[in-house]
Amino acid sequence: MIPIRDTIPSRNYPVITTAIIGINVLVYLVQFSQGGVADRFFYIYGLVPARYVDPRLSHYFTTGQQIFSLFSFMFLHGGFWHLLGNLWTLWIFGDNVEDRLGPLRYLVFYLACGLASGLSHLILNTGSNIPTIGASGAIAGVMGAYFILFPRSKVLTLVPIVIIPLFFEIPAYFFLGFWFFLQFLNAAAGHGAAGGIAWWAHIGGFIFGIIFLKLFQVLPDTGASKMISKATEKKHTHRLQIIRPVNLDNEDPNLYGTIEVTSSEAKQGSRKMVNIPWGFQKRLIKVTIPAGIAEGAKLRLKGQGRLMPNGRQGDLLLKVALRPTHEG
Image (cartoon, rainbow, N blue to C red; front, side, top):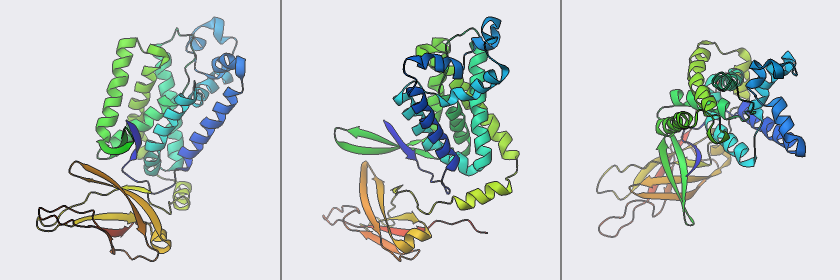
């Protein structure tokens, strides 16, 4: 199963999430260039618990270096797939949390979650001399916040069967809850770092993500956050949308749904891919939004409705809805 995205579109372009992803990629290129001295690079900039409790090691590092490693470790990765998996997860869940907290609070929140995840690992593995690296602890904090903020969301998941792509919507609370359960199960079974994975860092990040969310929600938005949010508002809705059609009358072969566009898309026209779950069917259809379309107008997709006992095939009628925009 491959998670594609969640089903709650963000209103703003995730500038901080994108910046974090960019920094992680740049750091990966730097560490990749280290070649044969990569292990030394990880030891200096990764989180090594023994460095903080063993005087024989700690005296080799300045206080500034020790503090810096508590943050730098969350931007290092052990390989391409480690990097890709972390950043893809952040892209799926980070935009909505950034939307809710605002860019500046979200940045502090992300770093605080990463720090808390690192300290969780450090406290429970004080004698370890193995560097801990990766953004997964900080991202776990983002997942914990998402778990609380968007309990009714769903994760659109791709399940490829041979060459046929099938999409399923998995409830976010189940997806994230099961993920957290697996982290705890692995931590308990492997004493916290089985297979080189810092399970307690994941668990700590997730739990502290929930705690920090409650604290950050109390803090007021700053004028800077509001200005950034207005400037980064998205001009387009998701290219791939989920349409849940309804049938208004058992005698009516047509299905009815709603497709969301921005005022810019309505004015200039756009193209969308819509996934239409109906019964056991999962259809993926291209939809063209004509330029100048008005809110409330209906797009007719011929032959995408119900198949009646008499052999008549209905249509799918999509009502165009304009997404509200920021004012002021």
